[in-house]
Image 1 (cartoon, rainbow, N blue to C red):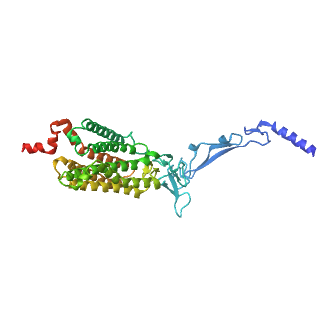
Image 2: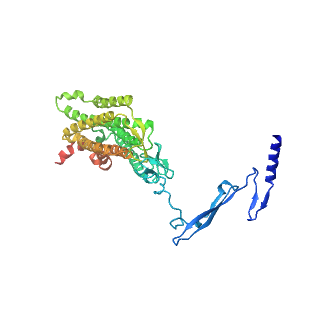
Image 3: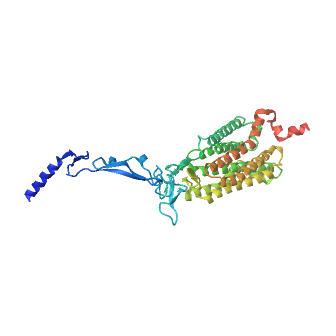
Length: 431
């Protein structure tokens, strides 16, 4: 046995040393395993229409070459059956590009298919994909639907013209309100300012100042804290403002009635009535907002369903019923105040502030009545913009209807800022 193994080893060693050229001019040798390296010619049988044919060498195979170089073919030298020089298609359908998927045709070979574009929210990033892949929730496919990219984040931003314009209007309006308050304080002892309870005027101006500023809570990237504050701050501040206007209106009526001889309203004339009216009118809204925050508070939400390819960062109200109750209560106070002021509008000139209040509440109610359908018909940042616009418009209506006429008299027509003119005695003498 040992002798046979030694003989085989000697033969293998001898074979490895063989290396010569044969009579055909081919090199003959053996590799390290004793195998003879092979080389084959690749030939193309070409048949012509005139009945002739030929074999043409179009490449070769070398077993000893690297794997990617073993076969080499000159495709330009190949002639196919139909006489074409290009490789014929082996399938009946072209390949599907990325962004499409294959849909096999019924009752046809598997190589026959249609290319169907991926549906909304899906993509394919390979050729001849059998199915499309759904993008993650925070991503969206490109227009070619060949890859997923992050969705665009949308909210009413200070950086865009619309948001910046609303912010500028809010700040400028609050500055005007602060200026009016300074005018009222400076000229507090003049008849025009003293008429109809100047303390209520100070309070109402301060509330209007915060009304304008509270609109800034709706602009910019929403946060958890701002979501909690937005609607509640807006509802409470406006309710206090309307309650304050209600107190001014009732003060007008009580003062006029108490001025009559033997009037039973004299005991109600005093500073305690306005405060009591404000507390009673605001109490309902305080209860609604407290219950709202306790049970179903507003929260931050990334809405990915409103608009494809965008993430709408918004504040959800938490409870639509609570939001409706807040708006309804504010509207109820506004209508009640309008009705009382409308009935008191024909009182003597001394108390003609009721006419201004009637106008202001008419504007207030008109704005918020228009707000409801506009708010419900919009989405995303435009819904927020509608609410901001309503806040600014209604606040401006209250400011310009009640206070700007008085500022006009104080600053530009000081001759009318006299007790005689306010009580109407100056007109009586002129007549």
